[in-house]
Image 1 (tube, rainbow, N blue to C red):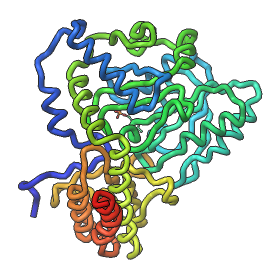
Image 2 (cartoon, rainbow, N blue to C red; image 1 turned 180 degrees about the vertical axis):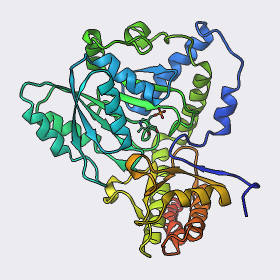
Image 3 (cartoon, rainbow, N blue to C red; image 1 turned 90 degrees about the vertical axis):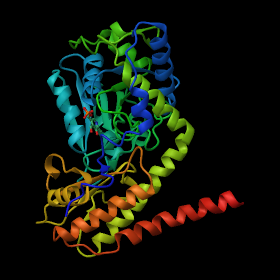
Length: 403
Ligand code: PLP
């Protein structure tokens, strides 16, 4: 067998499919990055990005760097060696953000989520309430943990911080939630949000940003961590990013403009609804497979299940990577691997970005074939379950149009 012909289905949880419109927008000759044409594009795009982040109070500082760069920027600019931060630890990405903090000489305290569950805001609140001296300078949370497919409760953690009357800054990584499901920087009291290009924004990897508010800007003025590439003070004037450390990543701005056009044309709320629909269909499919002592949805609470990807937990003794390999090599469907402790026990279906129902159904069908080929226990009927999940909201939409 083999799938040399036909579309290859890219179902990774990042990078995601890049629309032709974005690719074409990026294919332009270089321009002077200090000239009026680029400056206008840069200012316009950073301003429009605030709409996706739902912030009026904050502003965006972008970097020619992967998401790891924006993590570095968050730690380098806000803190001094020896400062203490509280990390909501819930998987590979929160652990790696914490590792960045340690590398800069910060003390990292951890409040850990229970296995396969979201962070408990009350546990964060308790830890802060016990910190009478206010030694904890910031709380760090990853909104959507891309390793586990669990969404963590951003607004509820902020409420717990407020109840504890703790002045810590609130830093949230939105890399795999932004432009896939709702994030509200101002309303949820987030002081710094980390974002990246290669997920819901449908751009190539290698471009990231932080959105910061006045509290974060103020903290950066007295922080003593060493910084050069990330130094906001050299990039920002009057609450606006005016320069990069080095040459500006021009093509990303052409791409970003196209991506923002697409998101606006569809409407952000419709983008979220599409992601919800595709996620529900994926979960219905995995639940159907699970009936034969087969794979399960990794998060145990439906409410905590991510709308941007589904982590599939394979039965003990059955290698998740074998399913991935078969799906890729026989059927041309690329899936994400299990990360860190979940390697071999999880494969991840990305359903974010430039994706629709037929693409998802095609991929799920191929995965069901791969489960059978891998000899992994599962019940058949995943696709029927996915179709049923898609039918219900579609029927409601058609009725609304007809009315
Ligand atoms: N944070 C989250 C939630 C992620 O999913 C990722 C990457 O997948 C990162 C941070 C790191 O981003 P990058 O790989 O672009 O450095």
